[in-house]
Amino acid sequence: MTDFPNTPSLVNRLKQRLIFPTVLALVLLLAPSAFAACGKVTIAEMNWASAEFMANLDKIILEEGYGCDVELIAGATMTSFASMDEKGEPDIAPELWANAVRNPLKKAEGEGRLFVVNPTPIVGAGEGWWIPKYFAEAHPELKTLQDILKRPDLFPHPEDPSKGALYTCPSGWGCQLATNNLFRAFDMEEKGWRLVDTGSGAGLDGSIAKAYERKEPWLGYYWAPTVVLGKYPMVPVDFNAPYDADNWNNCIALSEEECLDPKPSSWTKSEVNTVVTKNFKESGSDAMSYVEARKIPLEALGNMLKWMDANQATGEDAAYEFLATQESMWTSWMSADAAAKVKRAL
Image (cartoon, rainbow, N blue to C red; front, side, top):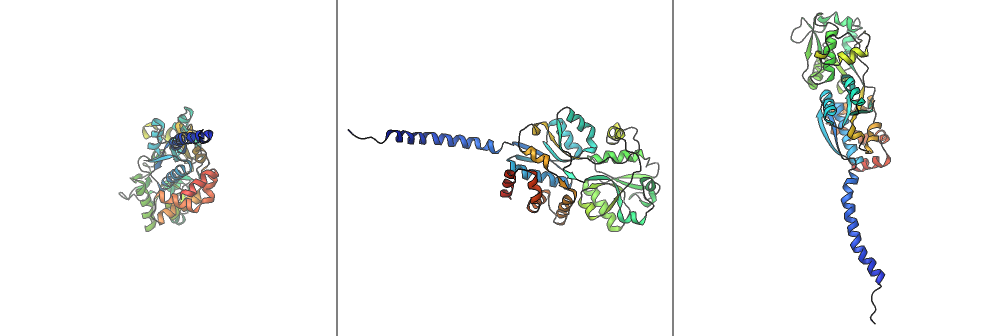
């Protein structure tokens, strides 16, 4: 009788040959979805330096640390918020200055469309009207906005020196609505003042730089953290007026058509939020924990903006520089596993 190979061993080998390729194929088929559990994510890349940096930082970390497929969508405060509220996209606004959209944001939260998942992504941020430090020191009598409004002659308009100039924000920025309404609330036109439309973020920056280079007066809106206020020291204006939330939220922060009778007010306390859509919040992705934990001190962000300016760098460049130099900070925002993935990718 002829001996046959050990039958159980042969059967096992046959099973291995048949089953293992099948299992491997299933693993390879399922692996992309496992690694891309975060899925497609869109992030608002708003049109100022700190927001560009924040958006690119989130993009890199979500892609490398959490396997997300990230797309940046260009925008601004009002346009990005409106798109998130009405269309559910982009999924994340890393740096939303909420003063201009406080009521609609509250409504969207109440109706479950949008969520403030990180109320202080930038610790110490602020905004309002400013004058150059050298000018404040040369005119110590200008202690409040009321003092300034009496002297339009000290802030000559570039096109009509007989009028005072107040530099406002570019169209589409929430601060344009507030500045223009406060201009009316304080009866500035009747007191000899005119608004100066800066046209763009670059135009607003350029107006401050030009004033500093010539040591000229300047009055207008700006915010921190920014490269500009790092390079050109400014003094915030004391509005010397009571803040009323109803007046601000239901008039000052709205369009002129919706704010027929604005009342004088101090600038509202700045609120910078990270806001996400319902889809992203309910996606179940671990990336949510990072978005909730990410907080950057004002000084650290200011240093990155100065680095961007000195090196003519993009928001993406600055994000990589931050990851390379601030490891102890950003690793604290995520799990050890996610941090290790990001570090391997750098």
